Image: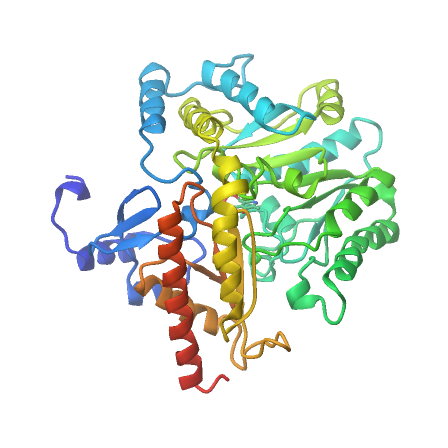
Length: 462
Ligand SMILES: *Cc1c(COP(=O)(O)O)cnc(C)c1O
């Protein structure tokens, strides 16, 4: 009998979960002592747990449910595809209708330089594909020495060996022998945390020129590519200063380095443009995609490749790379239905001209709260830096992350999912959120900040 048909209590469900389920990015002992929250259903921007609590999902699941929960068009498209052809591969000189249609649709909605896609099952797989592809690209042109990839500290590119190596998260590198060889990391454009006395614009140029200094130190003839997120997501919604991306593009072009944009979070409307590179006005050679491509209804990802790269790969014989689920028919059907909803309901434009500005105004006003050192937001992704001292952008006199977790717990109790990264609170609601739901989210966030402020004072952290 499936669990749906039983009347197990939340405590019983938690006990089964604790006995058999290993959670990702989780301290298992700590979680099992506390018990996991059991989510049982969702609709629009709301979740319900097994206790009947209704929660507003300020994180779109894991930054991916861009069109919100419960869209029948996607469910129907997937069911129909499953009946017709639940699986076939794209390896053996074969293809199928969903892969054909999705590849054309992606060529339409991505920037004009992109006409070709390589399908994957996730963001991590997309970035692993890119590591092999950019090295193969240079090797195929008799320049195998161009193999090192430059990425950034505190970037996030996934959890596979390749993805986590491209990422610059120290706790991830500390486990499993990472990074793999041939990947180096430069500074992130995190002005609030690392900009010191420089203006954001000066600091943005400095951070971009770290790339130039690294290339020149190692020699451009050893560097294959630079990869970065337009806005770092998991790293704390780090929005680079306005000077950053143009300078990065100049450096990559002058030194003949491939520019790779990891659009797994920023793609598919999050910033009020279809892709993050369009918001910042740069033209990558390659983009990784996942998350919002299907709004999470089924797992799928992809790599968009410009013609310069695609032609070299095409002329170099076999590309010995692929996944069983590259272009999976049901997942592709979900992505097609999702992208059509984004396009036909003008959801991306709505983020840019309506709901984005509406939410930004209220979110940025939270910056006046005594516990907030900086409020920032682009499109519908934002952050609040928590601090005991605004002017000094000071950190807390306790272990990093303590105040973030206190705040996150209050937020959950108040029926709002906000994520904490270090002592930075993060928000990325579904792009379909209504004005009333934004008001609800903001009032819950305000209440949460008041409670957290009272708590840190009680504990003597200020
Ligand atoms: C989530 C994420 C990934 C990894 O995607 P998975 O689907 O979890 O493998 C890669 N890059 C960025 C920017 C991400 O946010």
